[in-house]
Amino acid sequence: MLSLWGGYMNQKKILFITTEMSPFLPRTEMSILVKKLSQGILGHGKEVRSFMPKFGIINERRYQLHEVIRFSGINLVIGGLNYSLFIKVAPIPFSRIQVYFVYSKELFQEKNILHDNMGNELLDNDEKVVFFTRGVIETVKRLGWSPDLIHCHGWMSALVPLYVKKHYSIDPAFCNTKVVYSVYNDVFQRPFENSFLERIDMERITVSDIKNIKNRVDFVALTKLAIDFSDGLIQSSIEIHPEVEQYIKQIAEVPFLSYQSEDICIDAYNNFYDQILNISSN
Image 1 (cartoon, one colour):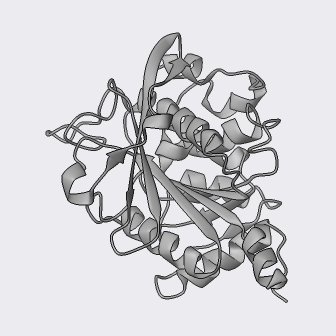
Image 2 (cartoon, one colour; image 1 turned 90 degrees about the vertical axis):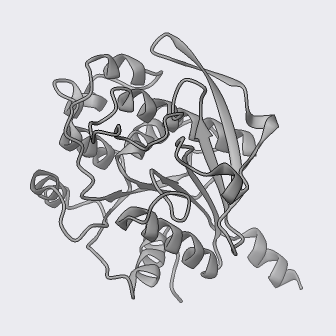
Image 3 (cartoon, helix red, strand yellow; image 1 turned 180 degrees about the horizontal axis):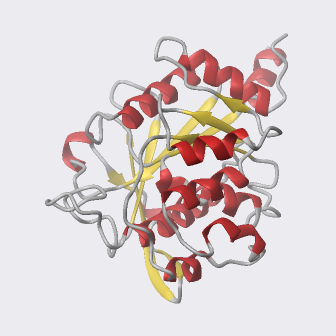
């Protein structure tokens, strides 16, 4: 009985932060993989929670989203502007995985994802990146749930490694947290405005920390920033941007998992998490 209790207490906590997840959004490479991982990693005996943006296109009635009142209404100041944070939650259908949805009244309300009806990238995507990152981290703190490992999916989560390793580095909720970043072929074309640098400014983040984005905040620069502060990297698309691929090859000291086919990805990712967390397979 004691060993069972001890095993439960020692469950490793894995936090998935993603732009997309099936079935809440259309099936894509990322949305399918994150759903599969959430369920598969839970099956490996780890505790799992997942966060994603609550895009306006998500059918709240169909998926039974309900607001978490005690976490909603928190004020976030970003670039001198105030945003109210709201959280909704719903289970992945037919599973024990709870998904937390982050949004504000100012952001994520359009009936689309990251593009307008003409296929143009939305002008406030850069604001969404900062708000989503801050919203997730602040909500996790208030949950009283300290993740052992955060796995980030998609450029919407690219600021998470920087924030966890710098601004939140002395926070008890994240001081021992490892961060893994998955690189996808999810390139955006429109560089962010220079005001993005002001929005991400927080205590303990220095000019040298953001050297890769100080001149131009495009997909490659933002991805390099995520890579710089990650404890492990995964190639989650068969092909990725060649400049990003070359950058990863230059960082030999960071553990890297190459692309894994669907039939073996759960075990491969779980073993990679264990490697990052220094868990013996014996």
